[in-house]
Length: 136
Image (cartoon, rainbow, N blue to C red; front, top):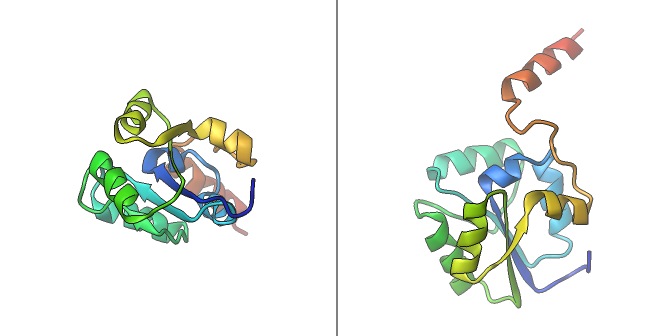
């Protein structure tokens, strides 16, 4: 991308889960965003557990608020030229429009940035079986 863009980037948790390597996505995006984080309707501990497990260091998170309030709070707190919300549903797109953020579908974002989309976002149990198959 452009190396140092004056942009705040927010991922909806479920969209982030669709990517094969969320940690690598955040590392890459840090090279061209000013601030980056995760928002979700889920309880704070769900987001925290996911980001900790994936070694993601975020500049902001939704906390106990909903996505709309979180995105507005981020916009109020971080002054950048652009605010981009990466999501995966029509509801996410409507939300971005409602709060004045640019919307980018996670698959489009992945394609543009060279990120890998997971073959199946809901393969938590299958992944564990695959790891066991690799054990000696």
